[in-house]
Length: 313
Ligand SMILES: Nc1nc2c(c(=O)[nH]1)N[C@H]1C(S)=C(S)[C@@H](COP(=O)(O)O)O[C@H]1N2
Ligand SMILES: [Mo]
Image (tube, rainbow, N blue to C red; front, side, top):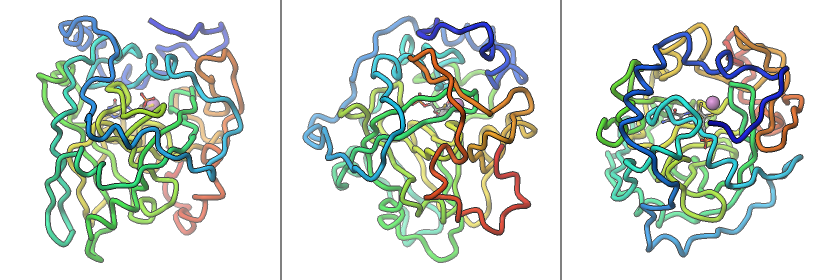
């Protein structure tokens, strides 16, 4: 079920959807079907935290296009824990984002366990308008609310041995029956410490002026707007500071197609499709894709000296 009408020349879903190489779609969808249809409701919101919304907009982050309407962005989602189609909003009722234990561990002063709600309350939130570019060659623009990942780094107090941050999503087949399927659950993502300390890296707690809806990865997700969307891990339960580069969910699932760096680059095609342009969801338009998704001035320096790495898959 799609809100977007595709034109003949657009990438067919079956080619642009990464999982197709790796699994039998049917078996997973059967699992997801058991959840039943539900409406998208901003449930699980921390009542005490809602006075943080809407947060003041940080005007430093400018857009070159319109915002994607909320009813479009919240009905076209990738969240494979809830199945492989874009209509996650129909079967995400079982996600329970409150209470939500978050662990922060690894190479830090001392391990932390905190309820996500308490962490969020302790932070000053801001709104940022960001572009989001999925590796499947579609994009949208969302007013996210959150705090810099850098603030979380300060809060965690890593030792100088920490070189990467590893993020992990929940694993719970009661909340997400589709996790019985084929993939190497839980969903894992990671960044270097330099990337984590870049201004753009955002811990997201809300969208569209409200605490995060479940489909967006409540109660806490990451957004890295210069990278393909799969780096922006949802519904995080554990954040670990480590000295070795972690293996990520998509690298493990499809190493020939998805890498650690995943920076947006229109000139480096995916093995099965071009990345030169993107469908702007909800508009019927395609636009040329921008290097680093248009954020090169913020992030290009991060990759000096790493030219031998596969920076763009
Ligand atoms: N835990 C988890 N995080 C995830 C995903 C997922 O399947 N599971 N999908 C990723 C992909 S491919 C994209 S494009 C974005 C989609 O975010 P959105 O639904 O807010 O647009 O979430 C990313 N984070
Ligand atoms: Mo994506």
